Amino acid sequence: MRTIKDPKEMQAYSLKMKGQGKTIGFVPTMGYLHEGHLSLVAAAKTKADIVVVSIFVNPTQFGPEEDFRSYPRDLKHDKKLLNDFAVDILFFPSAARMYPKGSQSFVDPGGLAEKMCGLSRPNHFRGVDTIVSKLFNIVQPNLAFFGEKDYQQQLIIRKMAEELNFPTKVISLPTIREFDGLAMSSRNKYLLPEQRKQAAILYQVLRLAKKEIKGGEKNSRRLLSRLRRLMASAPSLKLDYLVIVDPETLEETKTIKGKTLIALAAYIGKTRLIDNLVVETK
Ligand code: AMP
Image 1 (cartoon, helix red, strand yellow):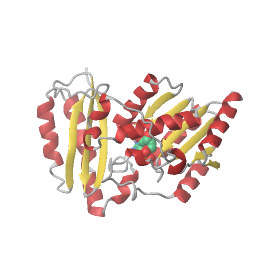
Image 2 (cartoon, helix red, strand yellow):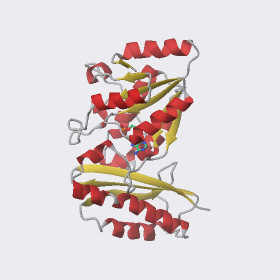
Image 3 (cartoon, helix red, strand yellow):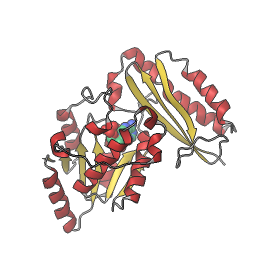
């Protein structure tokens, strides 16, 4: 695996490979890799000739009170994992290279970014759309792979790629979970043992929602109050949001029918975790 740090060198490499008729599969990450990330890498390997993984903890998607500085980093371990997967290129730029002094251009993600996570992280998706567009322009991928774990993120990126005419196909893949259902996340590292135990309730809430909907529950308000009650059984958890929404518009659903997204975010101590499930009914 070759590591490239310079955006210009990365772009030149990609253009050269595409000139030779090769397809490029791209997996953008913030590092501290786990099996969730690696499932995207594995998919990229099967679908593209060249696989590029980026590791960049993007400062513009963190709020001033958030964990940008303390975000877990372990480049040595990440490199080993990517090497084992025979990834072709690790793109590992510095913040100074990605945002040279005086940078002032951003991508505005629009209304979808004002819902759910956008309410407690006001500029988050502006930072996400900006870095992903920059990475798409640098890496020039034919295919780019994202996790459904960050449901709102993949939806906003898909829309951005379409509306800004990127020639990149956005592919979303299922959430990889721990033994007890907790969605894998680099931030799980922050959890103390008791917090880690209680974190499993998040997936139990989603499973209960699925069971109730499959069992015929159509009333969102009634279901939400049942879900909140289960959530309250884990005293370490402070709910940020729990919503039942349309999976395309993220508008709240009063009467559940067709495809429905149940999404949540909760704080355990200072750690903010998110998860979601799409449920389909007739
Ligand atoms: P991150 O490093 O957290 O920015 O994540 C990089 C990519 O990996 C994003 O597309 C995430 O949605 C995806 N991802 C993170 N956790 C998981 C997971 N548990 N299962 C599947 N994909 C994931």
